[in-house]
Length: 286
Image (cartoon, rainbow, N blue to C red):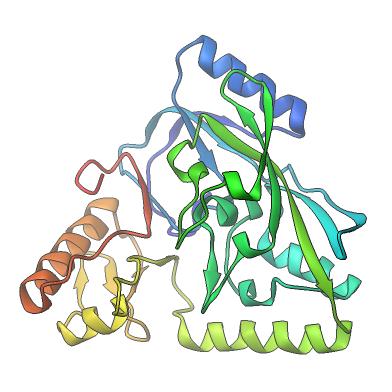
């Protein structure tokens, strides 16, 4: 269930089929004091080799996308958290709705993308968000306006509150454009991303955030880590800010490689690398 293909089993694995099921699962976990791990598309995540003692709650079946007409000159789309970014873009292209093209080729789901404010270049999904409806750990529901979401570079309030605030649905404000133009742009962006980023091996996406004034991949490459490996974990030869699972890699392999890269970059350039990759049950990285 994770794109890295690394990690042990979950004690409990739940896939709600709708908002009511999500609320029931969260109430049950709170009542029994069971920790909750929220899983979207499984990208950007490293799970420990020993697995997890808690409930993994996967949102894949929260998969509805709806047009809601216009509001203040924008076309409004409501999308549930389990919808993949690729599927959302395909809907928008078909409807002639613009504003999310920078997300083309980024893996994962809408819920995960909003929680980490995913994006590329100078565009992030938070730019298009208008409201975020969440289910709390007690099963109650609250809707946040965009100014309450705390969007910043690869950050939102929902990151810090994962398990306590589970994104259920998002509304987006989008503009209009010709479907054929949007289709060309989305296709070109997907192809560019495929050329730049490693393919053919399991991978979780970018490992580190870009430090202020730097690119993490460039620092790692200059430090001499491109193409280096620990066990089955390899720093991708095509992009040094990616680690791939060449086969049989463990979370410990990835952890060891990350710690060595961090230490090397700090010693050579005086720059601390902060993880973009999320970790569950990997104590060395938390």
